[in-house]
Amino acid sequence: MPKGTYTFPEGFLWGTATAAHQVEGRNQNNTWYAWEQEEGRIIDGHKSGLACDWWGGRWREDFDRAQGGNQNAHRLSVAWSRIQPAPDVWDENALDRYREILVGLQSRKMKPMVTLHHFSEPLWVAEFGGWENEGIVDLFSTFVRKTVEALKPYCDLWVTINEPNVFAFSAFIEGVFPPGKKDIKTALRVMQHMVQAHARAYTIIHDLQPDARVGIAHHYRGFKPASWLPTDRWTANIYHTLFNDLIPRTLNDGVFNTIIKKEHFADAVGTQDFFGLNYYTTEQVRFDLLARKDLYSKRTYPEGTALSETGFIANMPGGMMDSVRWASSYGLPIIITENGVEDSQDSLRSRYLIEHLHTLWGAMNTDAVVEGYFHWSLVDNFEWERGWTQRFGLWGLDRETQARIRRPSVNLYAEICRMNGISADLVEEYAPESMERLFP
Image (cartoon, one colour):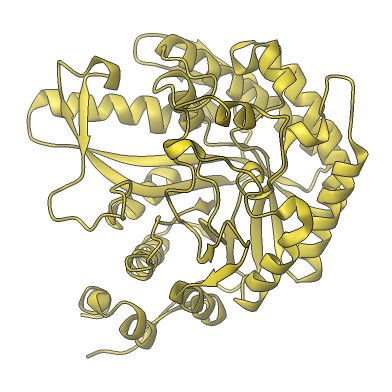
């Protein structure tokens, strides 16, 4: 059996990713807290509650775990609702808390990446009309200016908006995120406002911090036609165009092209310094005339594919190659801002992690420029409308005691980060079923 190591470039960022509402806890002034109080909105009636108690200070112990696991970076988000709890109120104590958190990363020699919007807004913003109201571009710009001015001594790597496509589809087509609407025209208008808000934020950040690097975290989901039929190919292409391509294409050429209609946003052109890429899985898409609410499609995973415990994610590392090649077409350096699998028993995660990183290494050796990888997530957290039913953490969480549970994948990822690569010995120990694939 051949031996060796797939080595990543010197200075590669190795980290994990989190989001404010999912880990902080005790935030009762945002759209997600209100959503959780409505019956039937969250699986099993789950509440975020204390979450991982980061607002209570447990970020310290989790950062110690990340540092002890040889991670040199961490991606987190700030909560708009904490920093600006009312239209004319700024909470300096909240900004001090975020300063402390970022200093905590720096003191552990971990590079911060800060996301400014990760799926939640203050309640007063929702009452104003949220992302449906074009006025949110000004509101978000004011929030960005205040926040970046306060935090710029501690961070120079910014994500303006996390997964605007997921936000728009989930909140305004599927109706599973607040405000729970189901209207594709509204979803497209929301995406336009997010493009405008990002473009404005990009300019503001560079005015305040010329050397900063700014981007969006784009969610790429693979859509493959389920058959050779033209209807299946057409349906898969529609999904790819509207879900994957629409926003990054607009930021590239200024044309918001929904196939049916084009609109122009010249100010958005060139407003990314890196391409933030989130990839989890790939689906088969079949045209279904009866599935109007699902855009006339049925989406499934290929038969025989290894699935996560709730069937939410299929282990399809080939999609990582597709996503990186797609992102590379925009001519920007790439940072993998999220990748991971829900797995409370830690039975699939090691294989998933190794195979996806090996595929990433392969893409980088075919000219893709990738600067870092952030695994989702550091510790189990509140997974939006899915509540606590999905466990994405390297570290498990006992919600009753707040105890962290060390999973075997903690050791695997620590070794990958330490050696800046994947060795045959590591694969043999943690994912022997992948050995033949990686070291034939």
